[in-house]
Image 1 (cartoon, one colour):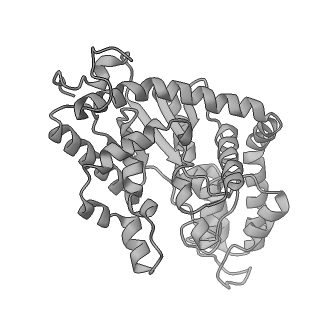
Image 2 (cartoon, one colour):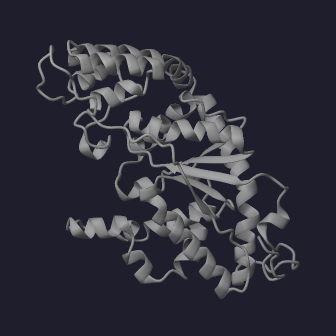
Length: 349
């Protein structure tokens, strides 16, 4: 990163030296995390907190406002995401977990970026185009969604944003906005983020064989009651091959089972499937047991945090304070470059 001009001091010069900042957010939708969320991203997020001094994870309650119009529901959903993350192993002493709306600074940066973002860029956003194709009633929040997302990324000087390949556009748009702001205001106030593609991300199949997604209603929850998990697993779609015949292991039930098995166990089961005599029901029953055992420690942690909501609230507020120490120098640099607020050196009124 090059040195900034005097008009807007670089965030890196105003903050303590640190490793690269990693950031990701999760929108509170009201559903517990499912296996796709965990193996596809959350497990890697927990690993990243061990590799970076500054790993930020926020609960995107502002983003949820385009789909949820009920305040108490949003609060419940936000708490649920916090519980899921803490249960999965996010360590608030290492990572920074916070509520997006606890930093209204992101709304100010959103407006600053909105004022320099071309309409054409927003019209090319995947979410907007998909909504248009479906004939949905599009509001301003959905249309400008990428700007809020960019503000989330840029406000903390994020260097790396973990995403799947299908989400790379979000980072590209954030980079475009940052470059445009820096160019227009002749500064280097905003750091250009890079996508951290989760190359080893598991593509987790749903119960119908398609990618596991709440939009397909084919998910298996990490923390649902055993009966609900059992119903989902027993409903996994398989072919009609008789028990005595060899089985095609390129099916969802085997892929899901493999998530909880060692390489040796996988080789043994696949050999039995190829030989014939293995029933799908047996695989599903074993999958249920393995899944419940795997997530049991997380279930225990989640129950403990759920029983102490004050502790969860303190974690979120503490995370917001830590996030603000990263955000304020960057926002102040943007304000100074754009000629907003009290000039630097003029003192406060």
